[in-house]
Image (tube, rainbow, N blue to C red; front, side, top):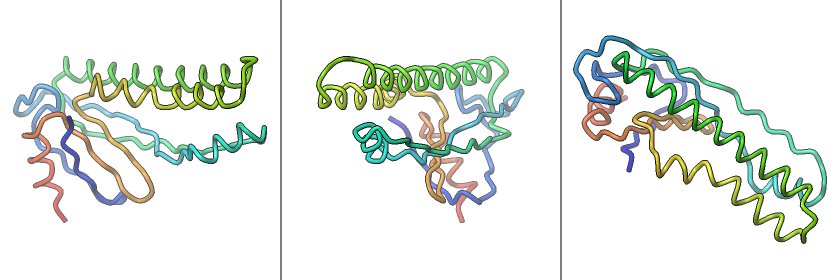
Length: 159
């Protein structure tokens, strides 16, 4: 379970002086993490797959600088985010390849594609990262596993 705070995309963000992983006060480092803006449309992607047309989605990357974390926690946090990205890209790629090249009925291809599409979401729920960010439209949602950190973050960023 995460504790989420949604803010406008253009708002200046202030993090509390507490490690987002272990909750240590005044951690000895800060980390920069990058996140993709969600502009994916499952409907458009599925329609493109069914009609064999080209589907293009642009997912701009956003960097969040100054995320407070102890040096050891910062390395674990970056590693966790890196593995989630690898799992996501591998899953989506495998889903597309299997859906295109398996000699099976189209409805089975759609199911396979959908399963590989949502697999990274299940992985991130089963193995949540201490800090995550979801960006869509003009909003950003900060997700913390710690209620204490989420409450402090909310107080610092109230508009």
